[in-house]
Image 1 (cartoon, rainbow, N blue to C red):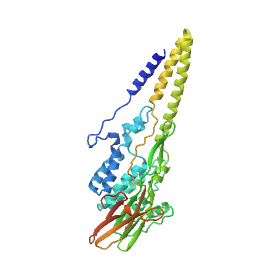
Image 2: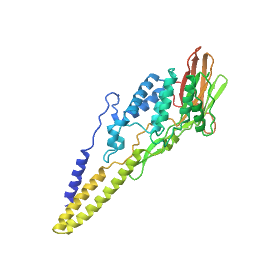
Image 3: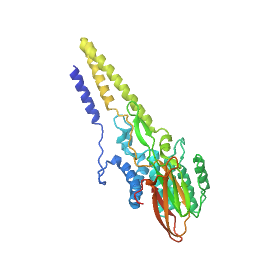
Image 4: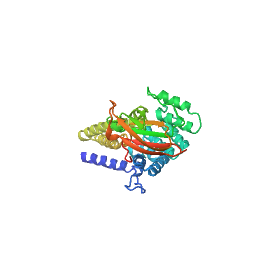
Length: 378
């Protein structure tokens, strides 16, 4: 009898597994990255290219990621399947949490400004603000200091009024003093440092998405050029952004999956135990009823085993923790710009120092420099 019931569980499981779908690997990548993970790898490759000074590759890779995240959400079949009881969230096409999507637009905005296109840079910073906002219920508003600050600076460069954006940035700066805009500043320094937050799963079935804090030995930076120094404190913290965006729709779905998994497991236990007692100790109709009850319990256990409430813990694992920025004016000619990184006590960390050789032509557009404590091109 017990062997018979066990075979029922196996058969039920096989039937339910047959409902799952497999995803093909993408054919356009060297490592045959699965289609569902392609955006994640584009994110990672994009920032790696940027830190190595491979700007054309960074633009191409980030453009591919942004094309996907801006167009796939409404009709993504894998996302719809992930809402079902028997499909893992990690099987859906990865787009990332809001802070990850923000960074794709942020990096692309920097690259547009490098190419002398502050209008497109501003469009990227505004798109990033939308990613950090709740457009439908207005529960959340973008609270990145630099997105507003750079929005206003780009407007100023385009001979438009950026004062509202500057005021919003100052309100978000939490005690940090933002430098006033200088329309004559022709060097824009984007600085980042540290290691960003990590995702992990918590809860009985791993249904709760949580974030471990990012970490950074570097806590601030100073840009030195000629005889001038420009402090570049951490204006934005990606750990804060990851933790404070609020709950996801998927969190409720996973919570319901967890309840369903528990309920079907408990119902299965009750059915199996009660059914086995009746089937082995009863006679006639009682035995038949016991067999039926045990069969229902076995099926319920099989359904519980196949329910997948685990949160998706894939994440953009080479993001920084802190974002900073400064701008200043340099006369035409050659200059060495030194970026020094400091710890929480203000002590210099010489192993991270980066030197940038700049040539400022007469009447040139803005010189845009991106520096990370992980940069490999200086």
